[in-house]
Image (tube, rainbow, N blue to C red; front, side):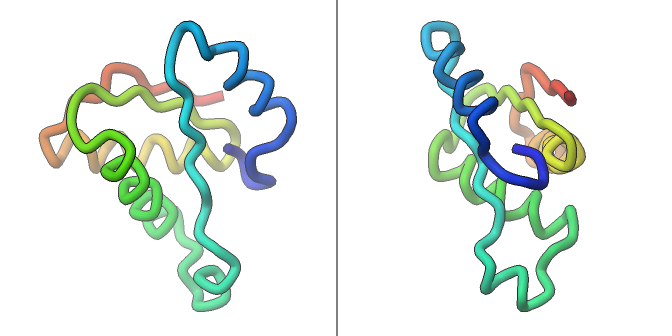
Length: 93
């Protein structure tokens, strides 16, 4: 998602993609984490990686990021590739 989170337009996109691909939105760190100063792109990427590892611990990953989410998706892709994971698609809107 972008900096405002998972809004109606992203929900509609996820629903329309349901027959083509499984869409799992990445959740940004909780307010308590942000208040602790963990707001860098690296922190957000690490939180996203934790979520990806839980949902899909192995196999191909496809990433699509919008706005700030595009920057985070790029960093996530870099880290996945460095860890030997296969990133089949990286889209930035």
